Length: 508
Image (cartoon, rainbow, N blue to C red; front, side, top):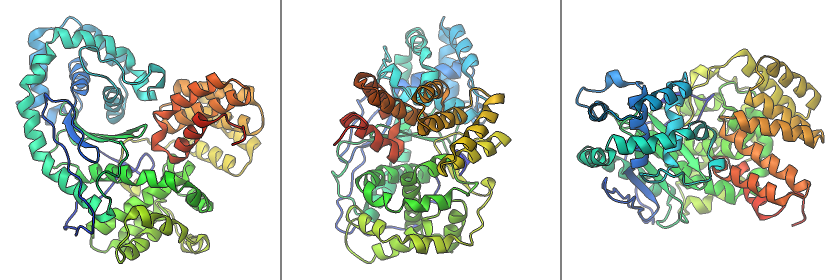
């Protein structure tokens, strides 16, 4: 599923060449059968079906989720599941239908996404017990968590255990069709970056098969240190999106390891803020922006499209301001023998702030609609409120807290549940030493937030407030609540780890 830069980060063309393996041990990818427990290969990559996710998607299909159904062949898996359940007439269907209608979102991608998020964090049937504390569930999953008791009944009443076994040949065929493409893509990425097998420190990258979702969907999640991609049925597997998330899996830890070096270049973040096509998450987390730029440059170097300089220019104008630097730096990387894990620090230190400022001095940034990217987040259409919110965020960045408060108050006067405005008011209060007001606004943000970044940082700030009040127990609860979703944002992840290690404000 493609979205623009304003709402996410993913894109690449298909690989067109074979890479030489330069001293790297290539990772094997495990392809486990439907009835088997998920098997982790050396390197932690799996391509497997997920029975809990299957049950969640089967339930919403029966309850009214019809997105993309008209493109599904009559003999397709979704129709087969619907026919099976219709014959069994589960008594819970009425309750499921009512639940789905109440929680249905206007955006089909976001509507599906909330159930994918929940399904990825549920244990096996028949209990479907969440694998994390309910209080720690990401916002979209938390919004639909009350479906779990209905799933337990649905699994039993529709005899889904038998259906799951009957569908094994379908999932086996899908694994057989997708497996070689996934293996080849991951192998090439490992070879290009020269990552040795076993360098992943227990982290996992799971590619989950979701045949009951609308076709051609690729939705990515990062929970803690584990990475997920859910891929629905597709005639042409979205391999570029799968590889993009895998490149995050490989390179995100380097942004954490070299946080000090990246912080030295953070003055460049201001240069990206005026870009209207760049998502807020990138503007507020320089490490995230830097990693995305590196990944996009890696994809260009691997894929070798015609006239790559045009792609570089387009990305720069979209707000990915460091793609030109990294594209050039990767040319030098190819001429030496060190792995990316070693070369990375040198590449960051080689970034000259005056030179990048000069490069961007005359750039005219693109409007949001000009660049489209695959993403883990739903499309968000810009409104007048979005313009005000951008203005408020920029005022906070400039330290103009009174002016920012005025802007956020205008938004809240017409939408008192706007998560960005609530978070902005909380940050203003925090920076103007009004902890009680800040605490209230951060709590209100947590209650309504769909943004993983806003939810994570609200928990982090609440943890810091409680630490400063001497309430370490409450602070730790907030850091733990942030730990699941902070993994997608390097700055937030570091803040969580620091908060768990010692009380905020205490001496090291």
